[in-house]
Image 1 (cartoon, rainbow, N blue to C red):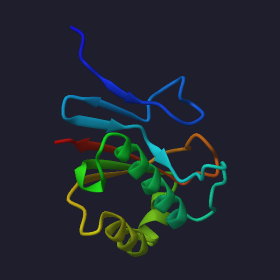
Image 2 (image 1 turned 180 degrees about the horizontal axis):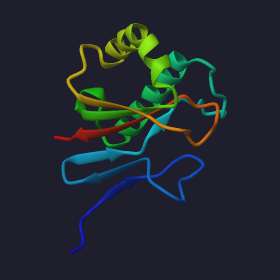
Image 3 (image 1 turned 135 degrees about the vertical axis):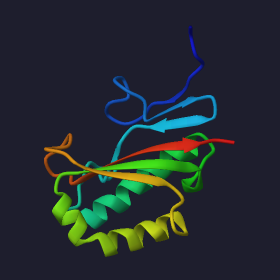
Length: 130
């Protein structure tokens, strides 16, 4: 049975996968990383997290959504101990990005590597659309 999908493709891998896929009122975002449009990657986790969320917001906007539509997020990090050591700063910034205490479920997973060895975090989200 075929389902109707609305896709948003962008970036260097646009031919391989979509940055966002909407099925019904659910939007599935590909994992977003802390990389600038130029390809530059900041060295620190906090800066990468902020950029990753900027990229999340960009994909959400393509579907007429914003951070308030997110219901679930997964953080993939290369060093969970580094993440926990900075949790106060990370979650303070996350609170500011959402504009309030995020109303989402969240999972934190340590991985061996991300697509670029300089990356420390990738954020994958699911959003509910009206």
